[in-house]
Amino acid sequence: MSKTAFITGATSGIGKATAELFAKNGINLILCGRRQERLDDLKNKLEKRVRVFTLNFDVRNKASVQQAVASLPEEFSKIDMLVNNAGNAHGLDPIEEGNLDDWDAMLDINVKGLLYVSKAILPQMIKRKEGHIINIGSTAGKEVYPKGNVYCASKHAVDAINQGMRIDLNQYGIRVGAVNPGLVETEFSNVRFKGDDERANDVYKGFTPLKPEDIADVIYFVVTRPYHVNIADLVVMPTAQASSTIVNKKV
Figure 1: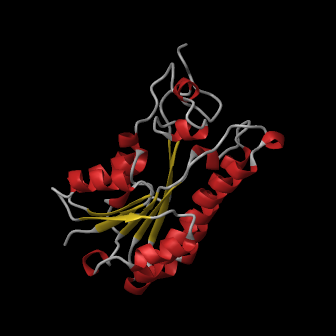
Figure 2 (figure 1 turned 180 degrees about the horizontal axis):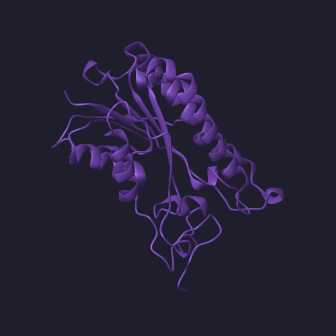
Figure 3 (figure 1 turned 45 degrees about the horizontal axis):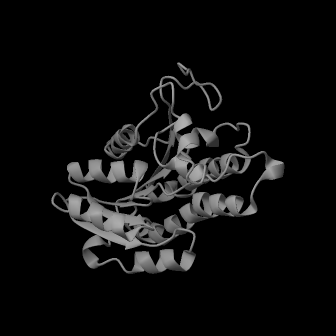
């Protein structure tokens, strides 16, 4: 019987690449995001291979999250895998110059959004005593870099939540693990720099960054291990990257 994956932030980057790879391998999809047009385009592309259902909501809104999950039709009601991918960074400022709205956005999406979605889906996994949660963290959750302050704090929180989930859900046989990417060329930097394409593009100049498909490959590897195997915490960086501040750029 085909399995079903619930992917947040599915309209771009890592989420989209993961959806495409899952579909290629026969995993049915519940795709979540805030941009309905992109959701529709992705559904039209992937439903040639698997069953696809889309949910348009903002993970920051706990009522919307609960309503969206409750609205799933019977054929999508059994969720085998949850990929908590939705997340973002806003700004790159020293703490004393930080924008309060940026702080709220990062904490609301990266931390509270992950919690809201997990809370809505966990009851069915607990009842069945099976399921798999993959939390997409970051190397920013393993170290702190200059001007990363609140973004790093939000990803450190994801790291702690991942560990806490694994402990609390162990009694139910639910697998929990995190994939923590380093520099991945997505819309991430465009969002962080508020549409400043030149500044965003500079982030990836002079070396070969990871691609969303690279992380999708890792996520697929994680979810396809035998059930007695749980990849608890995985860090993935491009070869050129040694840490958040050390990147071998040929420029």
